[in-house]
Image (cartoon, rainbow, N blue to C red):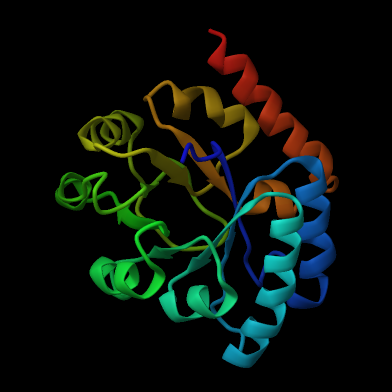
Amino acid sequence: MKLPRLYLVTDEDVIPNNRLIPAVEGIMEAGVRLLQLRFKKTPYSEQVELGRKIRKLTKSYGSILIVNDSPELAAELEADGVHLGASDAEVSYARKLLGESAIIGVSCYEDIKLVERWSANEVAYIGLSSPYASSTKQKASVPIHRFKTLVSASSVPVYAIGGITVSRMNDILSTACYGVAVVSAIFAASNPVQAVAEFKAQFMKLSTK
């Protein structure tokens, strides 16, 4: 499966749960086709309730739904896959629970040994800390030349996450990074629909260079 290059991630601090459903519907309508549902503070029962509504929406738009951290929640929601961090479940466990067709992504931060560890037989993509500061999580700052080295070491598609804006996409994609994972630049935008359009237009522009 060819993954979309624009990868949107939810965050309770950026888009509160009471606004999540209409916000997701709006960005789906705008053309987002890869969404990660990321809960850090929400009780599990509420995650399931909201997640089922999100799953229904993503199906209606033909969008991929990835659940952050929890293979169990991904299975409960019949999501398309799961994204795993260093302290989350093992990839082998997630694969066994979700099946061979599940999309599994992993965070490699700025660790080249982790990047080199994963093959396309195991995961669909990896996430790397971008060279930019994030407004949603603390992370190390990775110089652009180091980021390029990390991207080059990967045998699977790479998404940059952290502080990504439209104006920074040229530098990010010049490293051969496959795509960008975005939180605030879309969900916190004054006009999220316009923000989606600007990201998609930039992908089109840069792909023709």
